[in-house]
Length: 593
Image (cartoon, rainbow, N blue to C red; front, top):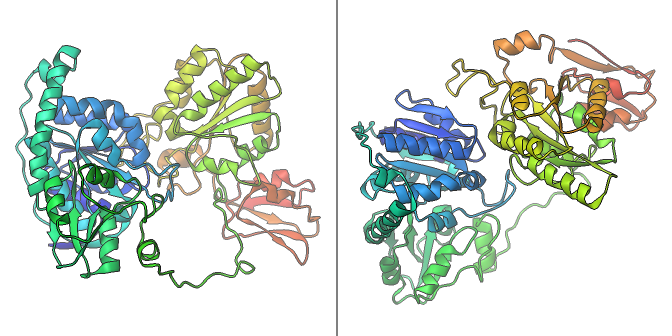
């Protein structure tokens, strides 16, 4: 059977064919669809985890318990999961365990461009790098065999283009793998220093054997076109090289990329006039190959940042500048990303942006857009959960300096709070920080495409799940000053912020209103019966053209430059009413659609 699959879909298919029985992840572009597709296979128990560390620990536990497990996350998620990853390499596995890292050259929706191939070397785990969907499916199956044969977790590196590009995949039936019996073995599973020293020796022995595998596996292969020029390529960079050079050069395709097949690389380079290294981001293969005394050309000619696209290859090596139609800047209006019409975060950022006495530490999510005009309501952001702990540090710095001109506001979403905000909030209360935290509860994991989380009442499969009460969790963290508000009511939001800034000790405001794009659950329909059933209208006779409504940043608003009047796009407006509250002349009314 052949199917047209993305790389993410192919990983899900390969996991199913490999007999995987447990899969877990935290959503993050470009990895999200992996677990969403795994969940369609009833033979695999699939779960969203609160964060990536928890996900990998659960997958490790399942492997120790005797069933093949899969864990998936985006590249920065591996930063969160490194603690268990580094130690799991020492422990090894029982049944196979694979960690998929979806890296993002080009940073299309990420805060950095880290190359997680470095983690394979740092954590001492072997690694596969597919270059298309067929390889993604085939390699994930092989990864489980390698994991069990060499007693190691396997790192499986995807990149954005492999994750999301589609190609034809030849599929097979599911392999029914016998469950591994669990046997107590503290020397294997308890990394006390006395035992870990032995684990380290075992790990080194396994890697010595893996070097032989790397030189013989069919996933590392030579395409000899009798050329003086050779290209060593991994991942999608190999496909880009083929697109540019075709059969005019010879290739060494690297699919199992750590440990590198140094014997095969030396064999391939012998007699070549020039060997180029094609890899996206860091010069990892290049450095190791040069260290082995093999002459090659890499990042001195090829870019170190961004995607290694065919156009960039042509420009770097052939001097060919791509011929493209350039847009006329006078005719193209800039369209920066914006909060959706009806987004429940809008009122909060509108009110925060009006104040100049705040240092606002934001988190990673849709609300990152609060830094954009017209709100300009963000000073800093680092990573998930850092809004609270980072804000705590800023407030402590202000206190130490005796600077009372600004107070810190930390802002994050519900899924981010569950991910890593809880421990940060404990830090705030335990260390008596006088900060205000705003938790934007839009009832779903918004930015990655509406995945369930511990506060939504449903699991990955859509079945009922216990709801973790954010208010109760905040109180359990020691917060005494806590209120929940409707974020669409600007007066209430303004009063809540003022209250939170002036109470003694840490304060938390929870805004509770569903994401405008969310498919409502029965609970949502009961709790928010009027949500998004309204529409706003501008009375043109009353409107004075002051443009204050535009400061809401709502894309449903427009301004008629000829008549100098505001207008509302009724097909976009959902009647949140924020603009009506801003209008100084009450020229905007909201009514049932």
